Length: 132
Image (cartoon, rainbow, N blue to C red; front, side, top):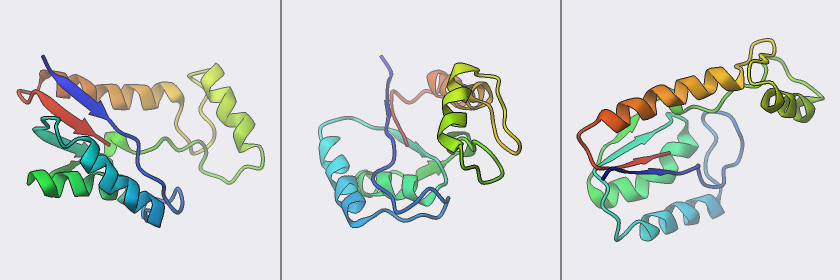
């Protein structure tokens, strides 16, 4: 049976693609490697965002696994322009999965993007896969 571990990044200093992990996030990343110490993992796939790669890197280094970066795991952009009402608009995108704000991505588009990767993972020969 195939096992897929889906992990959200550890605490980061921001949401920008190059945002670093905080000190707490770095501790969390090391703890994550310890958490998975007894779990077989054959392949690791990560968002290319720095905070995601940094989250899974301690585990990858311990296992000698190269982290594969895949843009299908990047976070969804709500809007291409700053919005004062971002929280309300975010909520709206969960009520209407097709709602797409200017310069942003709908929830449904993000779901299809991530699902395309999961479909590939399920067909992959590796049994135990970590994704961040």
